[in-house]
Length: 561
Picture 1 (tube, helix red, strand yellow):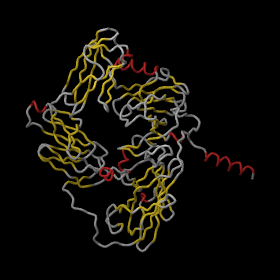
Picture 2 (cartoon, one colour):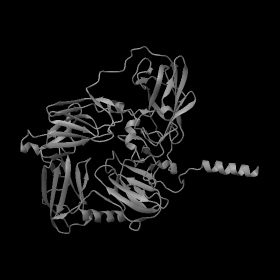
Picture 3 (spheres, helix red, strand yellow):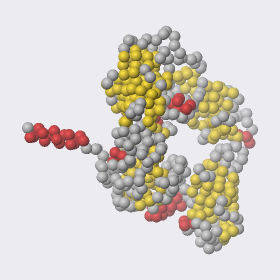
Picture 4 (cartoon, one colour):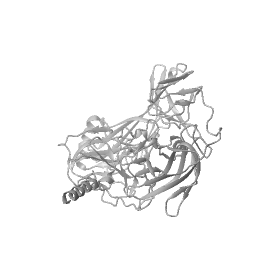
């Protein structure tokens, strides 16, 4: 009996242990960790791959290596992660630090040498293990707001050796959270024409009733056939008011589990399928992300677990059933939704199906639509479902469905511009129209002969636009022929009102200088500590080019001791 107990103890002890090391990684900032974004949170076209840690609304906080290792990747870009650092650790994990203001002096010197060699601010390098070794508790960078950051913060990730991001909280990175998740909406989805909810065959929002104990009830529904549900929810930690993502969703039908979504780990290859997991139409029309608690074709997310009958329930006539949803945050705080269901067959004719346009899309086939001077090509496997697509051409304006259907691949829009003059052709680009006033926004456009082409991963209204105006360039903190001895940097404001900035180049006395482009503030900044110049009199030249090829040149002389 002793041996049996020992085996049971070892087995239970083994199963209770986390597969992730708990005392290996330290927190990357020496402040109380407060989050503006959680792991696997629902973002536009992707799941969030790390923790967004608040930096007290400022930049320049010390960023520490989470453990010893070596810098295995440095990437600097105008958009995305901005300035990002990747550290590989002996245990095989990689930590990522993004939206940085700058790197530690050693790393900063290393990367600037390479930027000057390539004459490019944007750069990506993969140092060898011997080049930039990192010690435990070493300051490797300073927090910032670079790239596509919406405000000062540190984006922190932990990835496994297959480059899959994992929730850093699984490794013991602790965030104070005693609050229950909040549920803000519930929807029902009849699967087909044989199903209904409250005599309706299309998606229907249900009346959500909060209970005093923090759980929720939905007003009893009448239904029949195969039904799915969707939920809109969020979580809040103790020290912030941000509406962050949740950690786990489970559903139960008459006490039996039939769906789970566990937000612990995912791969970047699958993250695009977020648009299949959410109700994409609701997101595009109302900016709300409703998570569908059923699995449709093309949803291959690895976070799905224990899915029975694709998450749908089958409601029979003259039955009483209960469907329950459990929403959990990482700390185990939970909120339940209780949905009473009465089975009842529907009338023969119900609301739900409209007249359809003329063009039909089948996901397993490519499709080309063409009218007048415009054509659109969809490669095979661009869509998740068969559907009828709106396609209409009026002059140079293309109406390509409503932007309520997710695309897995880019489609290609082509314009024949042979009827334009040669001068006009050089200034044309394909634009997408946004907002009430249909403002044109540049879509990356290429030209071959009399054809303009652009690739896009979204529906909407497109047109030809003309950009014949060059970018503007204005000095911010200096004047021509003035002394700047007390300044630590030169700052210039650049702007292009239509197609946007494509490229820029700056020199002092004919030597290329490293200017950092902040697209959020439309500024270029050069820091004198680069030690490129030593002369008293200096000639600055800046050339800025927009996406159509219009260029502007700015020149000034400054003096410095």
